[in-house]
Length: 267
Length: 294
Image (cartoon, rainbow over all chains, first blue to last red; front, side, top):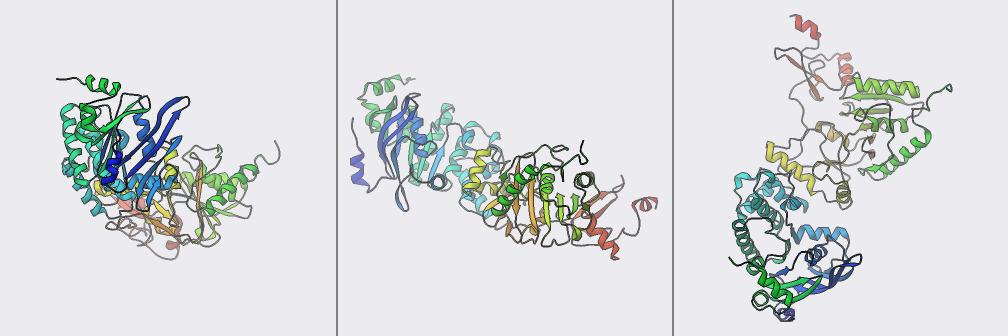
């Protein structure tokens, strides 16, 4: 098992997110066990593994949706590194709508289906105090353009959108406040391959352009191949292998990773 | 049967005590929705069961009660509730705003300024202003707790996006003392400015939803808006056809099937008082039947 976080530590001064010994149990069952890693500014970390390997549990714990049983999650705020597990709920939720973003697998979980596309994008702005309708609408139009949604559909509800458009709208809604860390849970799940390709292309552009850090949980190796700088492979709640994406995918060391890589269908 | 079939004001004393505790808590935390154990009342939900319980808990034998429904003293809801309290509490009733000590209302605040010592009781159908945007009660409570009120502006944003202006014309959300966002019950937004700095104690009762909240006298209440779409209280651009008032909130009344209509004060007591003082509107000199005969 190779740990490259030290190599990165030399490059950038402090990690944006520092996870130490994170553990979550569901009663006797293990959700994720003793997980530690760092994420640096501008870096995309992929987490892969089969269903039930604990990757979604890990993401939920990181994003504050779930409380881990043990461990620390330090996030670099303007006031220095703060343990998001220990901080109060008000502060954590403030982080969640400013510095963090969470892209759900199913856009219906991340969007307000009864509110227009513009309202969906504007919600985070209004949540942090924007009170000028014209400005809010202008940024909504700008962001719809950036995720390739026709500005003419700004007043339509997401239910009138296709699955791919809904997912792009969810991304726009999350990125409008220029977060520093984006959590993505299977962002391409449930989309057909051509829509997936477009979404990945878009995501890659946005991540590079905005210098975002991102943690992407997926079972789709093609997604991490395209997006992730580094990769963690999880099985039964443990990290079994980690390293640079290309290195892990092209030269898998752990038997499970080898199985995972060889399971991908070749067309 | 005893000589008195009901306790004073229908509810038993323990229930009234429970409601008074909720009211006191509501007064202590302006705009906060206090849960209370709402009772079955001898009227259907939606007819003012919350308001009736608050009124019952506030009534003393010396009180003078006024009940208004959409501003009027003589509509079904107002008449029934007034009769209910005459029957169960034997208190005096009035239609004059300045003579009343307790005013139970549905959908209006009287035009005449309220005075210190008066209690306004509002009937509230849905107390949660965030309800239609966030259906989860657990989540809306958390949003109130953490002052996460961005969503309220999403509703106003949707209004402007759809209609070009803030089209919400009643139950217009307000922020109380810079803290809780509150639904002022379905009063027209024309009445919203009267919520702020009012000398009277304002109590809100939602029977079905089991919530009581309050605005103590002289509390600062602000209607939510955008910088470039400021709040504006609106009314029909007309004067009252009966009393010629330019400033009161008007109802539009269809008088025939030929497109005939008249605008009259929704506050019947205000209108009658002005007419008694000699103010006569455009149609104020004749009755509707006389007009139809022309």
